[in-house]
Figure 1 (cartoon, helix red, strand yellow):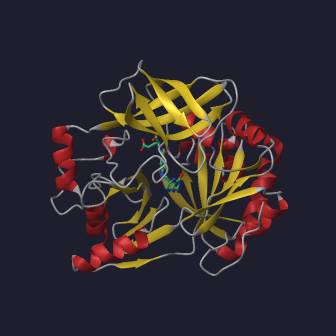
Figure 2 (cartoon, helix red, strand yellow):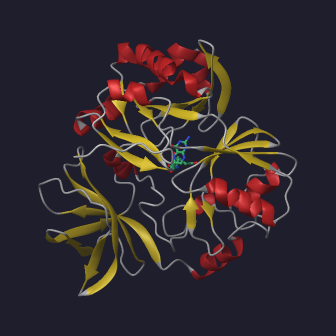
Length: 367
Ligand code: THG
């Protein structure tokens, strides 16, 4: 189609040479970085994630490091999830909201020490946001981007690959907990995490000059398990019900609309950004909710670059924010962000570029 023209605004990843030699065919952009997408066979890459083990260059999950006397205070101001019991070595999934309660990002927060945190961010500029909030509140913190690039190892066999690399202790890591360690002299943090429901780890490379070395170490350790390159996998994440902030959300989507309410604690301090709006939304109840859609039709018809309208009795009732062919369910499935008047079991029209398709609303996750 076309080649990406280089510019210093678009940051390559430390694994770029490796993913090229693996035969990358598609990439997307995320946090002004390249996010490798496919290596020529999306279906094979999907089944490898479901049945085996897959390695993903997710360097674009950039880290925002917060250090200093008020670091913990700022972390809690930025996140409506209660962090008071979070321990060093623990990670937590923390949706971030703006002042009107819109979800603006959904990082994994890694607490290294009482006064040092990483926000491992989704696709929006939290470096800007954190600096602005910290300055306006007069906090004593430093906010930087460390030299850190996550490499995800995902799938049911990921634990074997990572145990062969680091030792059996990795089997006892609890979900989102992490440990700073090294492999062949390469400094990394190893965390049990990853954007799939198939299990796995993320290796946070802490020396950008060693990307090819780390890639090769994982590739070699994974060879007995038939590891191969992959990427955050839309069919799997859709079947599994994971949210993509920025994909499934718009400028007004609050956590209650997209099944993230369990990560909001309404009794966090009043100075947490958005908490007053969130309390009001919780009291009044959200106007939209996120449900699954099972579409009619036998042929794969993924969503393109835009949401598609959901219509009932001639009225627009919501949007389809995501649609993908499910290789396990053998049909097109998607997410609806739709009026709470519509419920699982109801059917709606999806107004697609190629015409109207009927779909049934169901609870998430699909599988
Ligand atoms: N890894 C790292 N950083 C990230 C992501 C990642 N930054 C942002 C991006 N992904 C999106 N955020 C996520 C990350 C993890 C999960 C969802 C979105 C996730 N959710 C589980 C769920 O919803 O079932 C578990 C959450 C819980 O129960 O705490 O895993 O992938 N480094």
